[in-house]
Length: 392
Image (cartoon, rainbow, N blue to C red; front, side):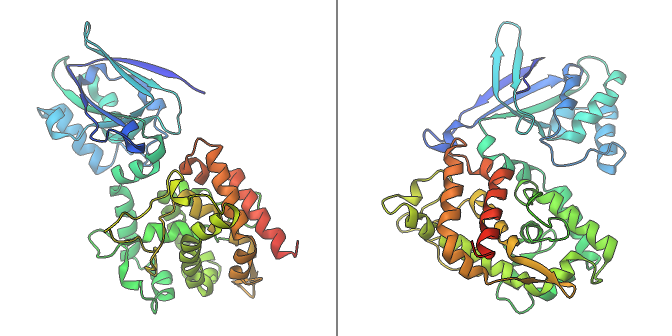
């Protein structure tokens, strides 16, 4: 475990009270601080893995930040600041110093405002002390929701990439595949589109079944869970390489795309039932990450076909189980096809796949996020499906 402590002189510091007094959300804490740009630690650039964007200090955005920093005033008001995730935060009243503790590069560091950080570090030598300040927002206890946090705070790059791809007709492969499905008008491909299904989610799901990238169990599509942005980038890269020619894995996948979306909903709806097969006295709704509809509230529905669900299951459970069905695919005559019926396989070993996944979560601190990122779990489920398909 890598541990790093930063002591930062600040002009102001405040802890924002958490409105949740109990439950999983009560562990998260929020702090805000204002510091002189001269006092921003240089070594923060070593903790950038938590930011899903690549920083380009020659971009138009970076140039605007630089102009505001060097030429303008009130930078801390005009710039949205830097968001950090930390293991711990303390404040020393005697010398107005904020202490940040980072312990895990996967969860701690710069989450948003990477361009602001880089521009400040590159240009602050041109400034006088006391000339410009920057706002810092620090969150602790967010490891369990980190992927959602990073995605929510870093949407603009994804939106830009998706919008450009849509304008270039890159998504026509998907649009054609779902053209007769009831959810086709609920998929949004670019900013301000109507709909509640992000094409980024679709690309992440399809990535699980890319036989060209993941031909066996040696490599697993964990990135489908851990980084929607990378799945978008991978799709765009493949389209720019192959276009809509038969060599494009997504063209090969086109005949089974709708099958995949139907299987997603099937897995999502059957997980609670499969859990009870192995745990007849267990309460699926009591498992960390699972949501149970409250009385007089609308029940959750499945992602694509909006079928009523008894419980909402975390993606950390759904994705590895769904992704294991890649073991049932083969490439034949230039297209992907099923070697055997995936629904029959699920009816045989679905309860076992769910049991393995839930137990893995319990052994990982009851954290579905860790399960979603656990390549060993993905491989275990894949192997079980593969053996079943072979008749074992």
